Image (cartoon, rainbow, N blue to C red; front, side, top):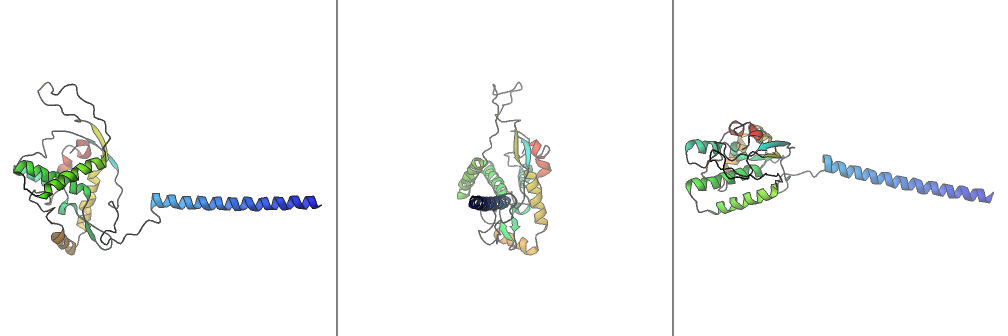
Length: 240
């Protein structure tokens, strides 16, 4: 009889151990699920105050992929100093240089892509009009250098066996190669739509803080305008 009771006690103890183990396992799985949900869906993500530096690192939207065929000569966005070329470059960024207001505090903040476009246009302006002697140029040079490294585009570009085609036109490496990019048209359209909701107070704030030395130079890149006909050639598929 005692041996039967002993066996029952052992079985009961084993049941308790198994139940506790199962409970801890379920608890661990639940914790992992919550943790993964936080990463994937942001269920317990930090609630930003949008005061000074307390803001997200990226625009609060999901940008999908899009293909872009790189081309060296589009017949547009050149290096000339003529009014047509200046007008084209002035349409590269959305209104008010692509600035956005975020959060309940309406924090004014720049977007890196539009900053990079500004720097490219500034360097183009130097080629067209000459160096202005400011530190702005060196900043833009390094800003673009770091932007290229940051994006780390791994697209492969076949090398041509010849430098010129039959018509004597130079063949540049990378021409006609398709790159998978982020859909910049989507960001452009989102920024333009966002701008439509600005209040007069936000317009005035931009005029007072948005046109600082870095963004207010005379290179004509921060005037109103559009993406200039889908960047000539069908948006992302036509290249920039």
